[in-house]
Structure formats: structure tokens, C-alpha cells
Image 1: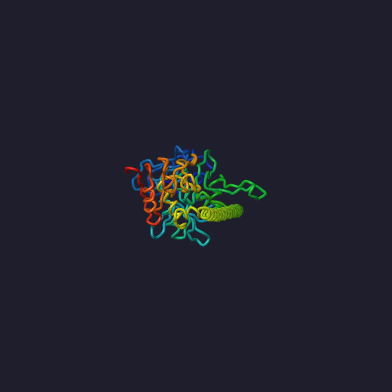
Image 2: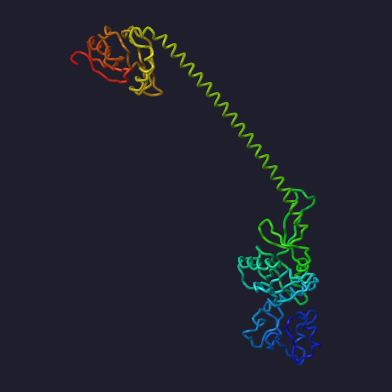
Length: 418
């Protein structure tokens, strides 16, 4: 594990100190009489013990300030050794604390390929690190063509964004380090259809197995659907890709069907709108035709009145618009009334639901004004008619003078004494 013994029988100590004493009891070290252990870095005396995390390690009798091994936690050192041991067991050369020439990185464990080129760094990352630092340090390795796997013993905020493993130390002597998070498989219930369940699931395995699979290329870093990086086999990725393609195709069919439904609905709405437009046009044309017929019928019906009033038939629509505008009410044209001096009767209603009532007479014969109702308005189309009314009035009369030519409207009170 990197420590050396002095003043001791090396043959009796080799088995106990072979990468943490695999196969021998840790207590055996204490039973070697006359054994004194020294740190290979600072040559200071060290002793064996078990940490609160059950990690077997050596500690300095007096911790020196400048010793790198003394300032490294037991868990970190043991995890580095476990990573190096796993890499060597997989058939690769692995060295501890190796950096590049530019000194931009220093790997806890650097693994070399069959051509003795560095290709994978195994980092025992037990101290805090931000996701940004993890990404930056990973990129530094990648710049030199070295992949990296970060290994932690607790859940860390950076483990989603970089290739990593979360491990647990052995509980009992002889147990293996275990991967709790970072390795995943894709399960898809047969038959492989969209109706059968499929999901990524994290798996547990020994750390030695995980490192062997990673270094031998049996698993690789894969970004899952939730943007989390984990290690998995290519066959699982291919299976997930097939499933994703089926889901995409099914979604495309659904989207196409939805788009077709929207297109048909839009087409139906457009057709209904066109039908409404044509119907409105037919109603408008029918209303216009009806209005023309009514005007023609009214023109024909009022010919005798126009002759009586000496009014141009072409001015009659403008005259009626002035009547409706000045009265502010709905006005309907009646018939020529002999009882009112052959004047044309006009009816109005103050409200929509009320009945039409006689409101005025247009151009009555002045000879009929002897007993004229005082509340009945006389309407005339100019001053000539006003003069005739004034000359014949025998009682107070209210006269509305509406001139469709000048578009002026005035009210006059005429009669004896006015």
C-alpha cells in the first residue's frame, strides 16, 4: 500500500502489507514482534488502526507538515489503492499520483493501455467539489486524450454531470467495495412493444467489476434522458434507442393525426364561415332588393302626394332621413289623408316596444287648417310651404321646415298673434 517496514523481518510482513493485508488479519501486524513501520515519504514512524468508516490504515505517530501521505485521509488512500488494484486485476498497468508534463492535472490512479499510453484516470474524490470544477477538471483530462471516472463514497452534486461511481466500503473483513450508483442497465419487457414497460435502472456490483468493465470498454459513459451521466453497455443504449425510435414514430403518428384533425376542423370552420358569408350576402342582396321594391312601391304610392306637394320624388329619401334625425325616433310613412288636407301622415314610436302613433303631417292643404290639433306637427320642405301655412293658419300651429336641398331644419310657431 506504499508504506515500508524497517527493523523487521520482511518475509513475515509481505503478506500482511500486500495492498491492505488481503487474506490476513489486520491484527497480525500487531503480533509481529519487534516490528517497526515507517512512512516511505517522510520515514516517520506509523502504526496500524481502523478508522470510524471501518477503513484499515496506518497513521503517523507525529504528523509532519510536509508529508503528502500524512495529509491524506485513510479512506482516500485506501480507495486509491482499491482503484489501482482493480485496474491491475483487469490486466492494465496502473500508477498512483501521476501527472502530465504541463502539470494541469494529477491523477490519483492513471491507467495505461496495451501500448503503454495513459487513457483513463481514476479519481478518488472524497473532498467537496462543485459541478463546474468537476467539468473543468474532466475537460483538462480530455485535452490530453485521457478519460476520467470520478469515484465518491457519498452523493455529490457533480455526479450527474461527469462520469462517476458512488461506492461503499466493505462492511466486514473479506467483503468487496460495492458500487451503489453510476452503473445502469436498460430493461424492456418482452415482447419489445410500446405497451410493455421499459426503464433505465441503476445496478449494484463490485467496484472491481465496474472498473474492469470500464477499462475493457464493455461499458461507456452515457447521458440518460434526464441529462444524467452513467456507465452502461452499448447493447443497452441500442435497446433504448430502438425504444426511443418507436416512441418517436408513435408520437409522429399522433402528431400527424392531430394535425390532420386540426386541418379538417379548420377546413370545416372555413366552409362554415364561407356558408355564413354567402348566407349573409344573400340576406343583404335580398334586403337590398326588398328595399328597392319598397322604395319603388313607395315612389309609386306617393306619386299623387308628390304632385300635391310639388316635391321632387328624388328628394324624398333625404327628407325622411332629416325627419328621423331631427325627431330621434323611429318614423314610418303612412298614407295621404283627405281628413288632414291630403297631407302625408307620419307615425313615430318613442321606444322599440311601443306602438306607432300619429306624430305629424307633411304638406297639408292650408284650407284644412281651421280645426288643426295643436299638438300635431306640420312638416314642410321649404319656405314657400311655410308661407302658405302662415297665411292660412287660424290657430297656433307648430311647423317643422326641413329643406333636403340645403339640409337645414328649423321649427316655427305660426298662427294669429304670432
